[in-house]
Length: 530
Image 1 (cartoon, rainbow, N blue to C red):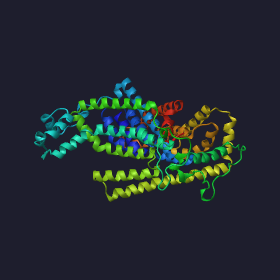
Image 2: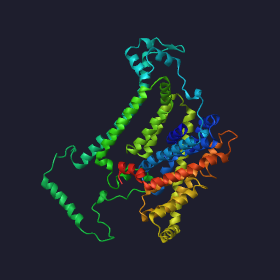
Image 3: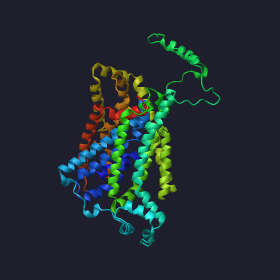
Image 4: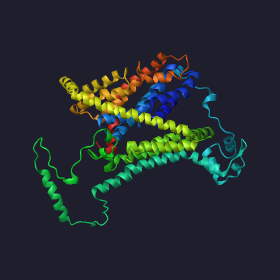
């Protein structure tokens, strides 16, 4: 389970399937095999967990689909968030259920490997103050005499060191407080202010503009547009333009160059977030606050030396990367930056992390720039290939032929959804996701409007469906990535056997997503409107 969780968050940070599978294969595969874990279990966890990186945002696959389908990247990011974590949860349920049914596949680790090594300084600190590290650190801040007398490995504990350890111990409560405050600010304070401003309850006059206008003038201004709106318009006739000169209407956003444009979010009805929180939000929010408080109380009540050492290890290894990932996603989802600008935020954060870790050098900078340029060029050529294929396919009559054939079948929306997803699932066996999205997805996109299917929902189902493309032989790239770093006695057939059950879980996840579309559409509709 720990391996799958690490795979999930490493996948979010990197967005590359091969990098996560190879990394976890080196770090976790051999230790699991030495501990007696079943080969199929160990290989399936790493290969299935590694593919989540291309589903949970930020994801290159989502950006390519947005360009092909003409959809907003941030809406697709928001729609894939919950399904990605839900699929990871289904993987966890499967692993836990299999281990409970057959404990031999995942024997417990030896006692020596289950314990975190405690430094000599922490042991002496516990003996001087208290077994509970939080209580001991709070006491040491007020009365530091005994702590300053502690010496271990030739180094004496200092008063700034006490404060540093105290801040490390308080990190979970600070993280919870910042997260809950951020949710409250975005949902209640920020959106309520916007809703009041939109309703006219808060008005800020421009410099030099009159503070108010006579009601009669307002009534005259409002009567003219109202009269115009009541005039009937002939069916199929173009609406008369009310703008002239430089104020003429501009073409609607579209094409690859508009992907990630925040102006796309202004189209459609207002977002639920813009009208203020629903009444039940306050109930759910305070329930979460109470549950979080109880969890923190339990954690700090049991915070002893081993838990403290584990917390410091997590803070130095996982926390910086996790915080950077959350920041990048937050600036995208909350509309602070576009998807392109968020990449700059992530790059700047990665540079700062490398400087702090002391691993930044010229060679790594050159490799990073080269890989970035390589990935960018690949995506750009995918855009060009997709546009050329779609244009030629439509000019030669292929699109109309497919539409006539599908419409002649008189299928229901459910039948079309099943047919399209089944075709993509089968295509995932011999092809990779790039060929499927660039070549085959454009064939289905014009038909979505006829069947009244949301392209956001359909695209998210495609993203989940393509998880099987990395797990299905013969072109199961995850298996070959893992085989390259696995011991010689592990065969490809064993890896394939371990991956097969996860393909069934992908199908189960897709069924649940269709039956319960709110899991996919609630977040984008709430943040950006329908």
